[in-house]
Image 1 (tube, helix red, strand yellow):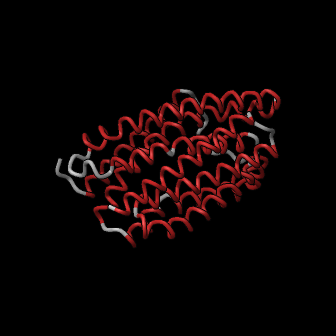
Image 2: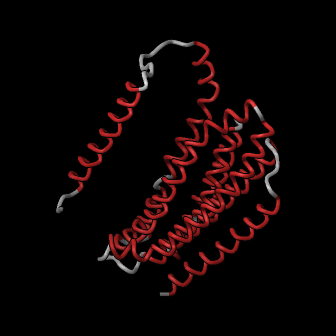
Image 3: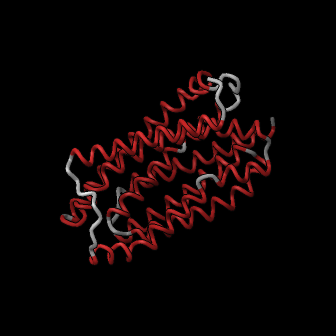
Amino acid sequence: LGGGVVELMWVLLATRGIVLFSYLAAGIRDRLHLRPRFDAGLLDKIRKVLPVFLTATILALILSRFDYFVLAHFQDEVRIGHYAIAYRLLEIVQMAVSAILMALFPRFSLLFIERPQQFRAAARLSLLAALSGFILMAFLGILWADTYVSWLFSRQYPHPVLLAQGFVALILIIGVDLFLAGLLNAADRQADDLRAQVVGASLYVTLLFALIPPLGGYGALLALGMAASAQLLVRFFYYRRRVGPLHCRVEIVWLTLCGSLLLIWAGFGLAQAGL
C-alpha cells in the first residue's frame, strides 16, 4: 500500500500484540495460574538444563541470519533480494513442520518416561509418516515455486524460481533433522542435540565463506544442505547410541537421497555461476 520500513514495523508490532493477547485470553479462559510462585525444586531443575538450552538458543540466533551477513559482503542488493524471496518459501514450510513437532513433543516426552519401548516404536512409525509428509511438501513446493514467485514477486520473476525450488527441496533433510532434534529432546538428550548443532553450525559458517564468493545464493543453498546433512548424521548417531536404532533401510535410502540432492544443488550452483 505504499508504506515503508516504519509501517512494516508497526504491522509487526500489532500482529505480535494480537498473538500475545490471544495467549493471555486462552490462559484466563482455561484458568491457568499466571501468578509467579517460588519453587526451589523447579528452579534447581531449570538451573541444570539452562546452560544447554541457552547455548543452543544463542547459537541458533547467531546463525539465523548469518547467510545474509556473508551475502552482503560478496553479492549486490538485487541478488540478495532474489535469495530472500527463495529462502522465504523454505521458512514457510519450516514453520508448518515446527508447529506439528511442538504439538507432538509433550506426548513423546511423557511416553519416553512412562513406556520407553513404546517410545522407540512410536518414533519409528512417526519417522516413516514424517518422511512421507516431507516428500509431499517438497514435491508441492517445487511444483508451486514458479507460481509463488510470479504472483507475489512479479518484478523479480523468474530469477528466484530455481533457487526457491532448491530451498524447498531442503525440507527433505531439514524436516528429518528437526524431527530427530525433537526426539532427542523428548528423550532428555539435550546435550547430544547441542553437540550436533555445534557440528552443523561450524560446517555451515565455513561453507558459507567458501561457497558464497564463487556461487552466490546457490553457494548458500549448498552450504545449508551440506551442513544440515552433517547435523542430521550426528543426530542419527546419538539417537542410535543413546535411544536405539531406527529402520536401517530407511536410513540407507535417506542418506542416498541426501547425497543425490547435494549433487543436484551443486549442479544448480555451478550452472548459475556460469550464467
